[in-house]
Length: 47
Image (cartoon, rainbow, N blue to C red; front, top):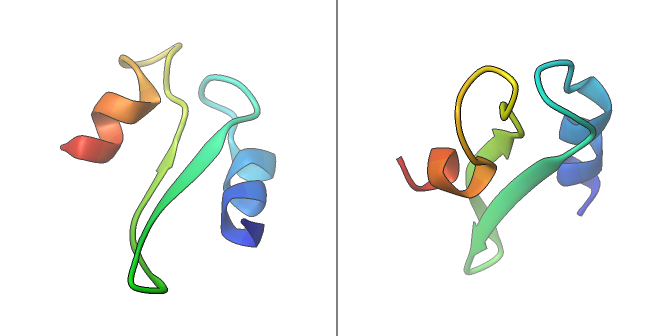
């Protein structure tokens, strides 16, 4: 959760949102909302 908060605080591309994907207690993906520049955060995380 701390990583998602840090990502959201540093995000200047689309709003105060950050996300991480965790598998077996290890972060396997990170992303920021880039809705103003790209598409949806969840779609970017899956790429």
